[in-house]
Length: 237
Image (cartoon, rainbow, N blue to C red; front, side, top):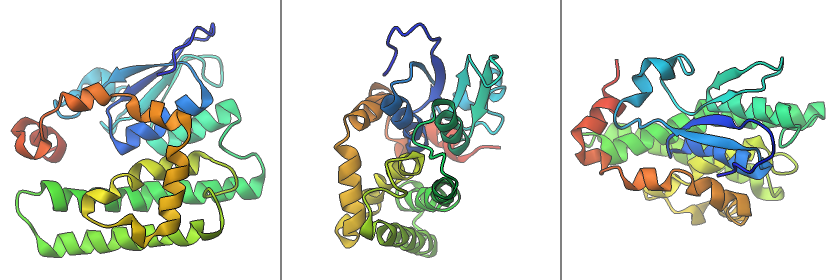
C-alpha cells in the first residue's frame, strides 16, 4: 500500500478485497499516490453503516475521500468507474487527453461496469453461491460471460492493451477477468485475453495492488457456508 511520506494528505480508500476494490488499488499503486485503506467488511454488514452511506449512498464499496478535491476541499466519490475517471483526471495519467482515445477508454470502461462485471458476478453467484443449482440461470449467465470475454479477446487480437497504453479501462476489466477461472472456463479458449492478463500481472504494481486486503480475505469464512455473510451479501433490502 502506498503511504510514502510525500507531504500530501493521503486519499482514504474504503475497500474490501473484491474485483471492484482492486480496480482502485491498481490505479493507486501504479500512480504511487499516497492512500490509506479503510476496510469495509461487506460480509458483516459494514457497508450499511450510516457513516459509510454518507460516502457511498448505494452501500457498495469501493469509495474514496480525497482531502484535496478539484476546488481544494475534500470530496467523496463512489462507484468504481467514476473513481477511476476522477483519479485519471486528477493525475493526468492512465486516462488519455486525446479526444478519440479518451472516448475509446470510456467505451471499454462502461462496457465493463455495465456488462462484464454484472454478468460475471451473476454467473459466479449461480455457479458458486446460489442455495440451489438452477440450470437455466447457470447457462444464461455463463454463456453471456463467455460471449463478453470473446468480445474482449477479439479486441486484444492486435494490441497489447485495450486502448493504446495501459489505462483505466484495463484496470477496470482485469480484476473481473481474474474471476473467470471460477466458472470452470479455460482461458486457453481466449489466447489474446490470456496474454493480456499475463502482461498486466507482470507489472510490479499489480502484485502490490492485489496484496491489499489479502489478510482481510483470509479472515473470512467460506461465504457459501457462512449464514451471516450470505445475509449481508445476498439478502439486502
